[in-house]
Length: 157
Image (tube, rainbow, N blue to C red; front, side, top):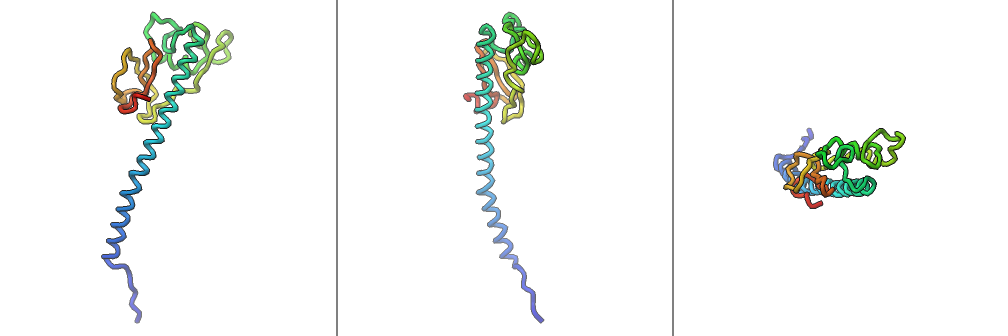
C-alpha cells in the first residue's frame, strides 16, 4: 500500500512566513504609488482652478470669481464661485445657463474638481491661508484670487 505524502507543518510555516515577507515588501510600495498618484492629481487640479480664476478675472473687469453678480462689496460665496465656474456669465459676473443671450463668457469648468486626498470640492473662503485641516476641498482667498488645497502637507501646491 502506497502512502500519500502531504506537506509537513514546517513546510507550511515556511510558506506562510515567505508570503508575509513578500506582503511586507509589496504593500508599502503600492501604498506609496497611490499617494503619488493623488499628489499628481492634486497638482493638476490646483493648476486647473488657478487657470480658471486667472481667465475669469481677466474677462470680468479684474474681479475674481466668488462675488455674487461680480459685486465686490458683497461677501464672496461658495455658490457664486461654483456658478461662475460652471455656468455662462456676462462681463459683470452675473450667471445664466449656457447659451443665454448676453452671457457669452464661460462656462470655464464642467465641475469644480474634488481634492483627491479628502474627496471634497467645497471652498473655504479665507483672507489669510491657514494650515490645511481637510474640512474643505480647497482654501480660496477671493481678494487675491489665490487658491490651494485644504490638506495638511499639501498646501504649497
